[in-house]
Length: 464
Image 1 (cartoon, helix red, strand yellow):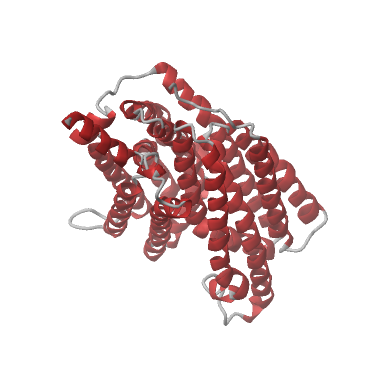
Image 2 (spheres, one colour):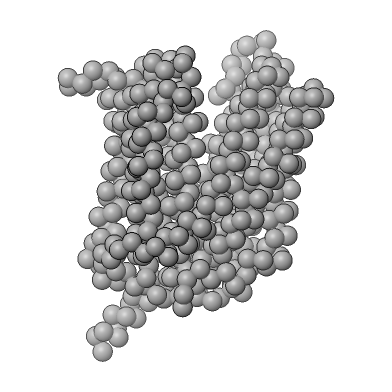
């Protein structure tokens, strides 16, 4: 009787993400809000880190900002692969096969360990090839130390998947916020020096970020291995499962390659805008900076939809996915309406952070940026809705289509039009974001058509 009671308690706790007494909106918001706060915390942390480095030395800030665009390709790729564990955890949780939940997490932990044999040598020996000579003084040590600590980033993603896939996102949120606060303190101390430690500049910022990431990974790992999780989810079974490992890599790699190709495309757009002149690069730089700042909304929403959809797939309740998707799209629309206040109706409030209101020579650029903010809002709306559908497709393992749209699609429907209309035809500075908006709509429409055709249906990744 006691064993039966315990099992019922476990079932209630572990399927709370699918609680029928809760509306889809309440469940989705309960999961997405902490994830948004986590992403927003990270965005603010990077923003303040840049301010600290700029206060210390402008060259340090420029080096760290520029080199980061190279580092993020390595980190994002590894983290994206490791995060696929969320899908498997969600499907196992939905299927009530809780003794299997720890297995995919361990496979991605092993992946994180393996990544060190690639990432660390690149950090130690690849900086001379990847860092521009003019940024070598501050950029090379920043790159080196970030790459030395790089395996902790996918490790954190793998461990976070254990909690997010089961809807226990507060554990991740609290850990991320604590880590970011620790990071900020360490950045200040190590950049300027403290208690016998000389000022380290950009190198100190990299070490601080690495130590903070290591702290969150260790903290989540300890929770992952606590007695309760060992008993319920068998998290102590760390054995390498070749079949499951390959399946995780197979499902995650297309998604990762697609988004990496998309990031490369944005880098190329920035390069083309720099060639067109100060107005073009200013408009696009501010536009992408604002997009990156508000990206915590789409990131949290996509992860939340992925977690819930994966649980429904595991529970063989695919009919509920349509309701989750509709709720996600509605929530994205409401959040976009809120963002319309600064982006559409009062863009000058945001532009003031980037352009001096007293600089008369930039009045034309200011007008161009404010106009672009309105196009940016439309792009954010369509892109966010595409990411909601992306969450469903990812939960079902339909990642090849995602790879196609973020690689071939980005270059075909975004890069080519930008090159032709803005570079060859010498289009206006606002035209680039107009074309990005059109591409965002195409991305959303293609994802929606893919969803309606149900090519992703019956994509159960686990064995019942």
